[in-house]
Length: 469
Image 1 (cartoon, rainbow, N blue to C red):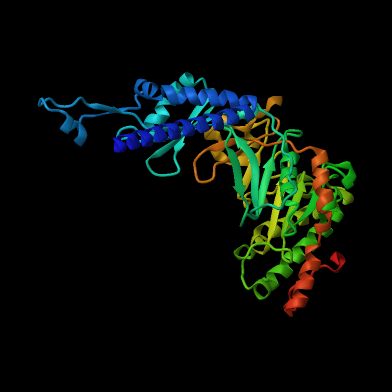
Image 2 (tube, rainbow, N blue to C red; image 1 turned 60 degrees about the vertical axis):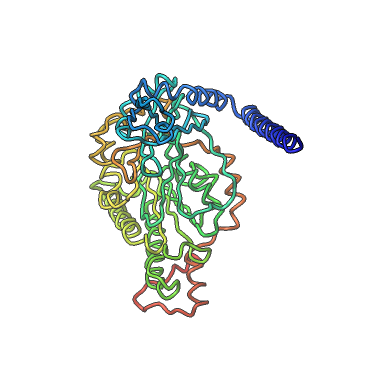
């Protein structure tokens, strides 16, 4: 009798434990639902409907397979000699909601793989009440990832508020979200240059502003701005950020020529000393540091510095400066990667007359905001964009697409469209003001570093510019 009471006691305890865990799970979900934004709440409800109806929907969409081989347990349970009924197997599905829709991971089955899921994607979009469902290979073999978006992220404006903290990883550019609401991150490690094009007012400068604001809190990164739209910093788009730069240049070709020569001299001095100072031939093998920072050269409206033609003496002089400027920037892009130079060039049309092809074509990363002609799109993104007309930046001229850029997909064929966020001027000014104490001229840093390490440069190597001190 005591043993029976004890068994009932354990049973009651197990029942109460199960009810407690179920209650805790329900409380957690209720709290999560109440704390979610209105858009996320819609996605949570959609995710619940998707889970409940998945087995039936999967069979209707052809995402199931019949297994005629009985399990060992089914064979033992059949005593009258009849064969067990075949089982209908459906891929397991795990659904996670977010503001734009849902992310689902599924496990493939024999004859139900990536191709079958991609074929069923339009039917899944209709059944799930989604604007679009995409299917990609999963993180592990034998898995697929389904992304369903209820609202189009490309026409949903976003705002980025810099947190003022140094980046966790150097040279990582967080661009925004793609057309499926997934974050787009571009690694710029070992990248010598970025070429960016697009019509005026469609988001080029704001895109650069985010990069500068996110990287500014790091003392291992220094900036120099060339703004071809204005003569003075306070007139242009970089008025709020200029205090975080060690140099600024306006639309004066002679001043730009002088500053570019200083940067090339610094590049040569770094090349001559890097192995003896850092112990490596490539700065990226040890990463940027406060003493040897990554130098980000931003050249906005780059055509200002490279294009000037004419027959009168004054214009001929400017044309000679423009030609030399192009050669100097070519030096930075082609030879500056290993010693810590990253050059960002922006212009409206990245055609050969705006950014010389010997510069543009060696920039591994290319982006384009809205363009008016197919030729401008090809100049920015290459001939392959002709084969992807749906992704062409020519289709982005509607005001709803301000801030949307196109770039090639790293590691996969095709192109992606990206919604880049807007960075408010007051946030840019706040970050620049908080980080202005981090500004150091890289030439002076190199001079001090060489002095501390006792390294002597070769006589033929140019010295860092004295003006930088």
